[in-house]
Image 1 (spheres, rainbow, N blue to C red):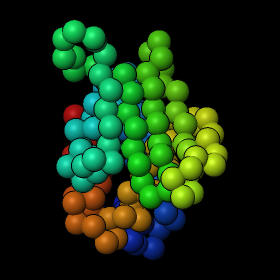
Image 2 (tube, rainbow, N blue to C red; image 1 turned 45 degrees about the horizontal axis):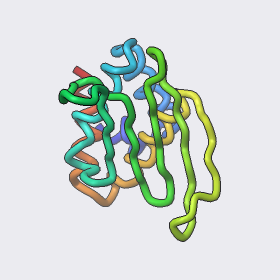
Image 3 (tube, one colour; image 1 turned 90 degrees about the vertical axis):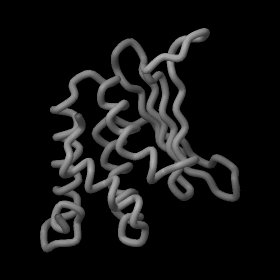
Image 4 (cartoon, rainbow, N blue to C red; image 1 turned 60 degrees about the vertical axis):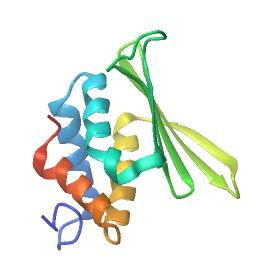
Length: 138
């Protein structure tokens, strides 16, 4: 397990690339991918995870937007016509200083990398990340 999380002798970036690829391959529908990430990470991220769902008058299971705050970074993914628009923003002193649009691959790599770093010190995050690696994205 530690090798997948980057604790072994293997190349960390390769491990994260493989995990990101498996998430995308298992869930071609971006809504399913977001739902799987939200399900696996909600407990570990708590209030740092914000979810906006579709539908105005009824509660919907479909996710329209996910926003994750990790340290000074904010990772946003918005469903737009069946694809994801991903951005990563950087803040300093509570002020957004930079925002970049990135590919889904880069967004997943940054998210998983930040979670891996946090998992070294936080048990809840480690369990959530292990759930992604071991449990898949069902």
